[in-house]
Image (cartoon, rainbow, N blue to C red):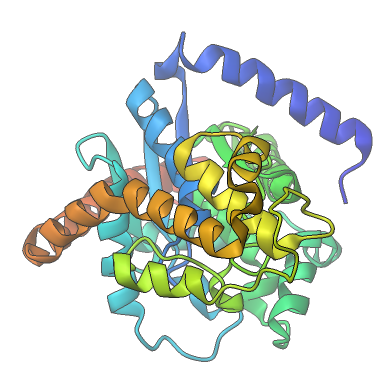
Length: 349
């Protein structure tokens, strides 16, 4: 785990970078991504996608990896993966990711990126890999045996970040150990073979916990998520069957009224209004009025994204072209980086 001092150092550095982003966007290359294990939902939008779009539009060099190889870190199947990947591209585009500014690519189609795993693994000890708290928590959450791929997951993430010389990665506090491991790999490579890689920094995101419809964290695995691809009718049905409580008067109280408060937070995120303000307005209206307001708020917010999704679904050739072009560009970058690695290691024959 990170010590308090380490976190404070990371937080200070993150704050400095944030202040500099708008002033010197050209200094930064951002790598971020998602595993294609299902549909993206409101939690993804408010948790990561909204910020990616904002940073992209600031002029920061942006790379998004669809981490298809990482699906099999804790799963025994790749069923539906092609459909999940294409829908992930559609969601990104519908939410404002611009392929003219941002490269979208898949792990499995960039061989040189994955080849970095071999020299990078030689720079880590077994103890360091086993110590990573995120690996432990993900293994426990999945209930799956610890695979070699899950154990080396942070090293694969280092390949994602360093293949494109990424120097900022948007993360929550719990993901900082991954960034520290990437920094360590970059530092050790540079010291051992010659400087090739930057030491990236975590760009700490505001810890907005996006609640699902049951008050727990919004997650595909909990079945409590509102997908970006859901229709207005599907969204209404999901919200209607969400659990509240027997108390009629609506208040915002996450600890004691998780179901009610989760709905209020969802409406707050979609409207930009305060949670207490929404609760006070509904007051004696009860859960029926609350659910009606949440449904209208979510559907109004998602309407332009859904409209864009419908357009994209009618032009799958374009969606595939975006991914093919992203993979082509990522391969160019990765091939160049791997050539620099070989040269530094004296492996040019």
